Length: 477
Image (cartoon, rainbow, N blue to C red; front, side, top):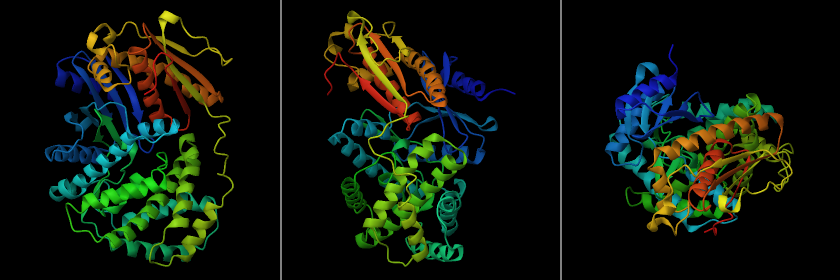
């Protein structure tokens, strides 16, 4: 039996007329068995996906072609092999909106560029929901064509059995009564529009300062408010409450350009769907983190409980849910997940830096030794061309220069695989520091680009670790 990589190699050859020089795993979905690979040759790069759930593949491929025909920024479908559960799509890069937000927050800033990206994202969301959703054939949806009562009960029971039951006692009959009350109320919002279902910054890729969208295979008919709440209350993004409110205002204003909106009613339902999304996320973290023992999800629980606590303190919906509210209040008081916000003890830190070989390889003053030093001088050098000399590897023009060269993607893929092998081993053994250095002639273009790209990849793959990036040869913009 052939491996997924072999089937993907053939799809790539049929599409580009060349066999890929490299095929490497770039992402394995934390919530499913889906795996994604990057395939690279002189003809360019592409993303190959393998997923044994054929119905989900069919949904993704249909949605992608429909959204592309509607002019929405989603990856092009190159080819697919449904019998062997693989398909080949456009490579949109590795930089997600989430990685940009996390990088901005790590620097203690929240630049205007991030606000612009969120506004663009919400504007495109309306196009998915209202425009493209009108002509979509919902018979292709998987696992369900509508976010109806049954879907909401699934989410609530996911929360009940995989999180709530593990932490606090409750009266099951009374809780079920409250679930019925909540579902009945939220059902009044209707299911007229396309609902992305997993609309979060991790599934929004940024290329040339524009958002592109992936992972909508769980889409179905549903309410408008759910996707907005999913984005604004995403745990890892950690958006401040005032910024969430600003973005909600922006979304509603843009929505009124397309349809008539009762803003008061819209906001009330938004609060309810924010709650059900928070509970669904806690259920997912409970299952993946507490049952399956995955550290990434375990470490995300405090952030999800912080969202719940904020909701409990600031929001109200016009229905009485006494048992549910009592349970939620107890969850917000759990001591198990209250940790000092400035404590990084025991958390792996990966220190990534660029350097110039003119100044020699920097010493490691951490006392740990080891780590990686990658020599980027074999890569194409934009510094030799006059129009690029004033830029650095963080500037869009240089990023585009390297993204157009498959040998750079191959180099990064090899470096990534080596570093990830060490990170997985370090996490297993409880180590707390790894050093990765990229060097080039001047420490301005190639080494900076590679350090930035690897840091974005690692932030996406390992949200639970600390990534520090340093470029001593350039002035941070």
